[in-house]
Amino acid sequence: MSDLKDKLQKSLRQKNIKNLILILLVTIMCYLSLSYFTNVNNISNSEDLNKSNVSTYSLEGVESISAYEEKQQQDLKNLLEKMDGVGSVEVKINYESSEIKVPAIDSNTQKNTTEEADTAGGVRNNTEVSSDDSIVMTNGNEPLVLQTNKPNITGIIIVAEGGTDSKIKYNIQKAVSSLYDIGMDKVNVLSMKENSSN
Image (cartoon, rainbow, N blue to C red; front, side, top):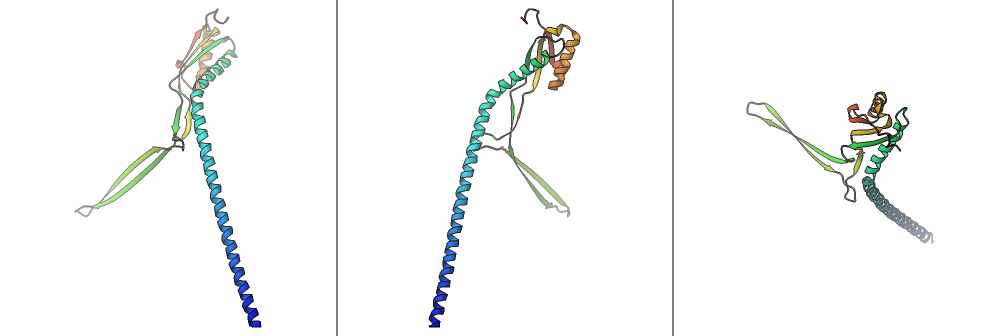
C-alpha cells in the first residue's frame, strides 16, 4: 500500500513539474510575441513620423525662403525707423543664393598597409587609404538634412528720409554692417525723395 502511495506521489510531482515547465514555456512565448509586435509598431510609427517630418520640412523649405527674406527686410526696416533722424525707410536685401541644406554623410574609410621586403634586406611599408562617402537617405528617399544655412547677403540698399545727412548715413551703414556681419561697402544708403513718404 505504501509502495502504491509513493508511486502516486512521484507521478503527481512529475505532472506538476511538467505543468510548471509548460506554463513557463507558454509565458515565455507570450512575452516574446508581445515584445516583437510592440517593436514592429514602434518602428512603423517612427518611420511614419520621419516621413511626415521630411515631407513637411521640404514643403516648408520652399515657402520659408521668401518668407525669411521678407521678414529680414521688414525687421530691418522697423529697426532703422526707430533710429534718431532716419525717418521713413525702404529696404532691399540681396542674397547670394537660397538656403543651403547640409545633408548627413556616411563616410567609410579603409586603410590597407602592406610590408614588402626588398633584396637588400630592407622593409618598405605601403599604405593605401580609400574613402567612400554617400549621402544618408530617409525612408522616403529624401536626403537626411542635418543643418540648413540661411543664404549669404551680398548687398543691402536702404532708401531713407535722413539719407542726406552724412552722419545718419554713416550710423545706418555701421548698424547694418554690425547686424549682418558684412562690410560697410555692401550697405548702400540713399536719400528718399521728399514726396515718396506720403
